[in-house]
Image (cartoon, rainbow, N blue to C red; front, side, top):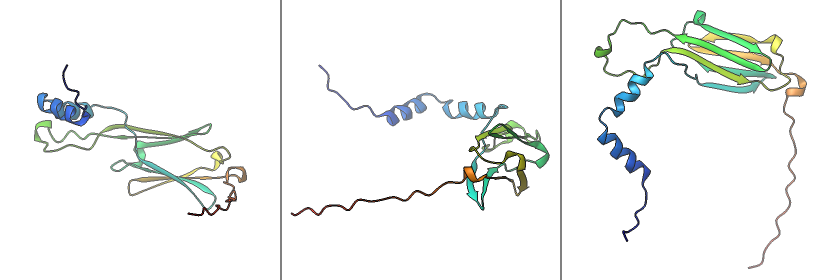
Length: 151
């Protein structure tokens, strides 16, 4: 009976990448297609408003669409690929082109009829007033005293 050896998943992936020479190019070719991609967002409460910021570098405000349907905020945009540079002239290409879309479920109680949005330096900022029922309520935490244990 043969000896048991531990499975090392990363070692297996490295071996697979060495044995498959087109491995890195496979992903590069996949990313060049017109595909939907998520944009990074952050959301927080400030001065009684829900603030949502989305990074959309390189997009023109006219290529961005914002909408609210029910309790879902949708941000859509498109980064157009300018075909000036031929594929064989690239050294590296990490920027993706095509559709960007992000959906965010809004908390109940926000006043979606009073949404405001602005665009500055590649960042969309959406501000939505929060109703009184949507504001978080602080809950006091009661801690029990620990009993001393004699050693």
